[in-house]
Image (tube, rainbow over all chains, first blue to last red):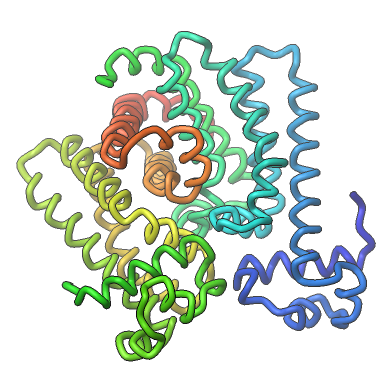
Length: 210
Length: 210
């Protein structure tokens, strides 16, 4: 979806404010001031603050899933592990490019609202399907299902942690780098973990005293 | 800190509501209804909703840090890795015992507010100190500092992920278990990762093309 410049300006301002002060802590007036537009034009574009939120989040996920799908298509000839690595790279890259909105959405998702439930059964179900399938293909069928499930959750955790503990990450690792360098380094750290999960997972699984 | 029964009832009700609807989405009236007390008694105990929040969070962290400190004292004679394992076990146990408040606090911490900044320089700095020191002692000095820092952040991510992606975890892994079984299984998964980080970290680090 391509937005008009002033519509995009409103979305950027809202993303920054939601990120910093939360959805409830931000007023339409704050957004209008930050975007240098009048309140009426926000109503015109999005109806309400809730409408703006839904538009921005929908936009975010549409593009996100498009990137994922295009990566998976382009890596069809790769090995399952390379495919997984390509997927992870795309995900971190996208989240880093949309840093504030990612952090904000991640926080909202932990609430129990109608909107979150709608997201969950649509976009998040699709995201989960892609990550799960690609990861399970890479791990293979020899690791026990229950353990594989934990490893999958661990991977999903790694994909969101920098956007949840972002204050922590900023102070401790990200601070000195540009977004690009961070993406490169962090993707490498996750790849190392995949080597562990895929190649040692089987060994470890044997040791698990379930 | 020991609370009177009705004070505790208010804290429990507030934890459940903050968890479900967020701080801004919860009114003092909601809390009073859920706790079956009148609004006046909430004002009496805590002054305001903000006062209640601060009390509950302070209480949470005081007990949390006490558990951590007592674990570290008790494991002084263990090896650094056993000590780290004991620490992780205590942390997951505590978070699981205070599930709703943990999820809520984790979400709030991603906001940029005066209260969060106060938490960060007090309790969170202390928590970070203990986790960092225990982890670095276990990893040893042979892994490069920058890589060690990423591993530390990865560990910290594992300690919060079930409380951030809690909807996801509930559907995919936790659903069938009691809290106790979950703690046991998840601590095992993290221990496997520690084996990877501590024993393979050095190897991996050599491969890193920074």
